[in-house]
Each structure stands twice: as structure tokens, then as C-alpha cells.
Image 1 (cartoon, one colour):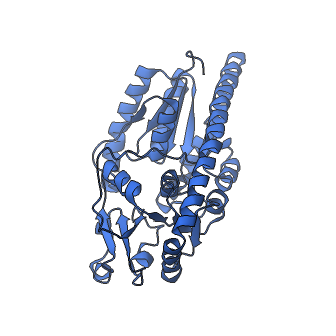
Image 2 (cartoon, one colour):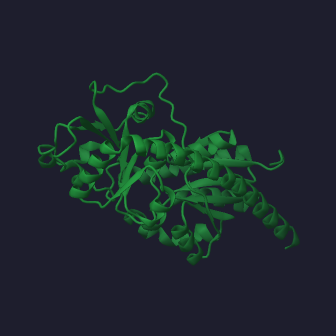
Image 3 (cartoon, helix red, strand yellow):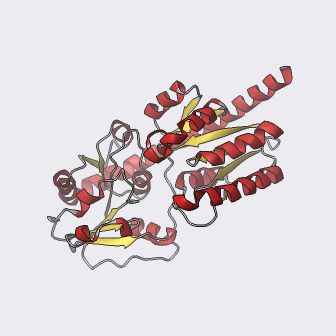
Length: 339
């Protein structure tokens, strides 16, 4: 892209790996604007008001032609749209699955439809979500998650010697079959399962029944989390929601880790090697854990092959996305001049 064309990346999500990966690929900073605590709905009006003002100040300073902004929350994209409406240019909305399917954002659907219709394009991770964007009157562009670069920088995880370690990647969201995983009791003899995420949400009754093979790590800082993935033998990431491309699955692929994940059309099209698909019930998840142990060598080899394929495919698609953003911005600019 020419130097005269300025694109900036913005998010209000302090743990948005997708936006981080975009910034790394472009070789430029990701502008993360976030105050106070994360995922605390009661303080949202206070923090969003402060983030609104900080975002306007930042964009006025940067004067971008295009701002790529992650959604949710939709208020970040709305702020960027208000800025560009006054100063020219436009926004590209990077719409995560929650925009379309997460219950807590349902009441903001009119706002999200407005943002989709008034952006240069809306990035989604798969064709199912692309169809929804078209129904909302927007211009979709399918760009899957990239393979992230993990960086433990000296951090190490304490595993028992000789154990087969599975990184269970969870956020303890309502769309994850956490109880089904924690109910598993029959593991391979040498397996430990390390469950990430905010385990404070698990009831005391459930915790009392959890197998000693299951280790609840709590919410890990980034380096510790990356260390877990870099040292693990396999990964499991599950979701009950359709059209969801799981970030943890891409992280596993980046490390060449055999993967256990939920059946879904979207995931099965991408994770075509090195992966065991399961139903979201305790018996089938347990089956997947035994299979990943038995077939580890084969699955690890296949996942390394898939990792190389996905990286090559994404590089091509990302360049196509850059070219398309520039084309649409240019077309919109010419249209305004003619008008």
C-alpha cells in the first residue's frame, strides 16, 4: 500500500488475539483502548464513555483513511464511524461470531446492522457469517483467523515427568461445555488435562467431583498461556455455538498440536487434518482424549502439515483483503468527490 494511504487497527478488547495477529502481519501497532476491569457489565457505561473520548482523541491525532475495528463491543466501531463521518475515510468492521450469535449482544442487533451497512466491508471468519452480513445489507469479506505467533519468553509450565499433557482452552463462557469436560473420570493412565480460564465460575459442587487429572489453571497471563501451549502434547477446545471459528484451535495448529474440537461445518472445513471431532457430551469428549493419546504421532504429523497449508492460504487471503480495502476506500473517495 502507498504511504499516502493510512490504515489503523483499533480494538476495545484487551485480549483480542485476532487483532494482534493482524497488526503483527502489517508490521504496525494495534491501538488497544480499554479501562478498568474486563468483562464487568455493571461498569460498562463508565468505561465505554471514557473509551469513546479516548478513541476520538486518538483518531484525531492519527487521521487514518481507514480504521479497522474489532466488534464486539459495537461501540468501538460506532465511535470510529462517527469520526470518519466527520473527517472522511471509512471503517472496516472485524465482526466476531458473538456479534451475530451471542445472547448478550442480541439487544444491540439494530446497531450492529447499522454498522455493517455503513462500513466499507465487514470481515468474518467463514461463509456462514458472510451470508448473515449480506442479509443485513453489508459487504462481507471472509478472512479466517491467522496462525498466531506464541511467545513464552522464558516462562515454563510445571508438568509431572513422563505425563501426556493436554491444554484445554476455555474462557468459561456460556457456549462452552465446561461441565461435560469436568465430569470426565476415565482418562488415559498418563494424561493430565490443564483447563485454562476463569474457574471461579465453577460451582463448589462441581469442583468436588473433578478428577485429580484435571488441573484448573485459572486465568493465565499471556506468557504463561503461551508456555502451556508450547509445552503441551495436544489441545482441546470446544464450543456449542454454530459458525464459530475457535481461536484456540488456530493456536494449537500454530504449535502443531493434535486437536480435539466440536463437530461443526465451519470447523470441519478448515481443520481437515490432525483433528478429532467430538460431540459436546462427556462420553464423546472422553473418547476423543483416548484417541488423541493413541494416535498422537500420526495426528501431530498431520497437524504440522495442516499448519503449513493454513499459513500459506492465509497469507494469500490477507493480501487480497488489503487490496480490496484499498479498492473500496478509493471507490468511496471518488464517489464522494462526484457527489
